[in-house]
Length: 528
Image (cartoon, rainbow, N blue to C red; front, side, top):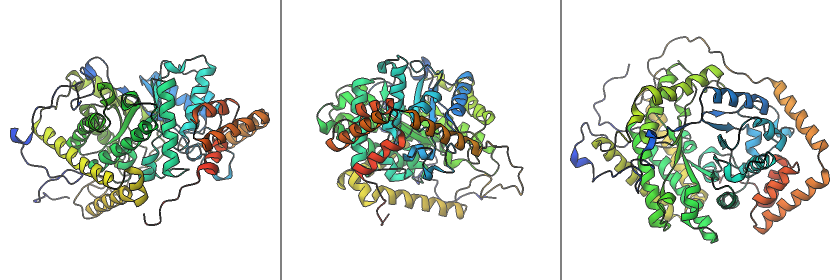
């Protein structure tokens, strides 16, 4: 069993922790919630008037399968939808493409055409339920489909609330799911921000995501720094175009953070994110409106912290992480299911994950006071430390010319890799203990019942898309794809021709092939 440590304590990110904090450790007043720079929360009353949105990630198999899961979660009290797509959809391949074989519906729902999207959201009131879609290099196509089905149903785009992840820079840093190089990828993201700012003002066209950076092995400080540096790059690109200002687009940005095991560090990270971003928007980009400086965040408990060994222990991990998210002031939260490290979650495990949030909201009392940890000497000192360390990273990225040049040099990728290596060494040496993995093991465990996706799902999806392609108007498809290609080449905003294209039956794969042809395909630099 692990022994007491005599060395100084540190956070999970390696920041030193004092055994006792006092007034001299906290610099100044933390201010008030809802007031710039929003350290104590983006809104004055926080959860007193409205709880955070409980938004469980869901997606598997066919659109019918996921639609059924959506309905189950809404029946159980979930307030917003969060959609997971399978790997072919994420990478821009239709279900009937040879590269999709064996992956259709495995890690998320399969969507190739607007018909799939119609089935996926069948019976879902798009103007009453906010929707999140976790998709990046094909985000423009999936958003076009969502807007198109809203139009078909007579739902004004101005009534649509939700978020599409669409954070391509974090793909090059961490998740590694891309089609095109960084420069054209950022161009497409900016097109979507501009379009939604004008046409769908309640829709967040990008969710700037630290989650995947953390899951790749970064520290909390690196997660915060690289996420905000990505945000800087998107704002710079949109503002450079001269159509919208930071005041215009600031309210259309959202952020997505991981909530890991180190309870106080995670709370401090979320608080530091708000203050640091507020200052970036005001001091760097000249935003004058508080709304443009207000960082709104979704958070998800740490998937990488889930263990296959003694998986029921994950219920405890998720509960602590969710509590940290709430105390850190998130606007939206996903709690992982205890069996997700083994397979797609079952309905039972999903319900336990949702009930975890509901117990925190209804039984714990933590939502009855705004920022209850504000003013804590330890929390404020740790918040200041994390913010300072993150700013140093941002300054380094600025010195490299910004995030896109930094990615080309491999800087954030190598920083994350080194952090992950250090953590693995600490686990191997039992300097850090994961219960059930390198400490407190049990010799044998009974396997859990898990959710399995039968191969018939793939066969049905392939048949569906082949029928769909056979029955559509071939001339309209050719004309629409020509329009998309022309916009990609000319630099015109891609969203209007994309919406027309999906309405005329163009598929995810066909549009992605245009991106591959016009923008080229990206490969990691050899030195990374």
